[in-house]
Amino acid sequence: MGRYVVRRLLQMIPVFFGATLLIFLMVNVMGDPVAGLCGERACDPATAAQLKAEFGLDRPLWQQYATYMGNVFTGDFGTAFNGQPVTELMAAAFPVTIRLTLVAIVFEIVVGVTLGVLTGMRRGRPVDTGVLLLTLVVISVPTFVTGLVLQLLLGVEWGWIRPSVAPEAPFDQLIVPGLVLASVSLAYVTRLTRTSLAENRRADYIRTAVAKGLPRRRIVVRHLLRTSLIPVITFIGTDIGALMGGAIVTERIFNIHGVGFQLYQGILRQNTQTVVGFVTVLVLVFLAANLLVDLLYAVLDPRIRYA
Image (cartoon, rainbow, N blue to C red; front, side, top):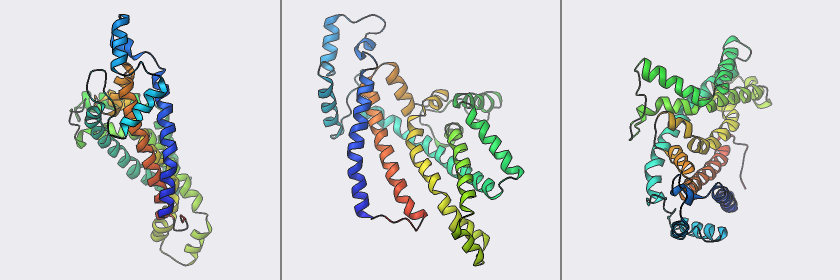
């Protein structure tokens, strides 16, 4: 196991540099950030040159990337165009989005897996058909529509929740935004659990357990569910980073000042330092989540061993 972890960590190094380089190049070709600083009117040449020199934008692109990566390893993600360090923006945004993501993941695991087990064990019955139709509707409806409808009904019409989330974003106010954020992924988790469970029910080891006379509950929980959750864990692990980076729509609807909000503002104002800094951290989140998922495989399925 130790050798496998070391090997995976070494494999993550080129992935990290390759992903950050690609992001850096994409962000730097999306427009002239100096033009965004000057507003609608074009900057005069002297002011533009001064701003480019101040933010290091007058250097070659490869040198900008090398300088940025060197600063990243010292904990310096640069300075936003408003003069605020990007690390301060991260310190304010990431705790909010992490709480929102945790609520969404809980919905995916509890509701999604429960519905998947329920339909997988009753495949072809009315409850199975009803859940499949419901998940199809959830997948078909865009997230911004779901969020606006729930905000209108629960917040404005019925007054059950606050229409927008407070700046400190406590967990109780993140339940509805977390449900909106997790809605599509929850539907996929339900369908994935159902399919995996239905396929593994026909496996030889399940037939052997039934032939031995083991209790049905033990067969389902200790044998069938553990191996069936492997593709589900894979999906949820990769979905963690996607939820954190893809929360732009949900955070805009509920006025949550998290990672999605900061990314939106950075892209809107062509603030390259903010966008690259936040996405760099999200790349690390993706890599750590994938490593954790791989390690969980051996816990769920005893047949999997790492050399």
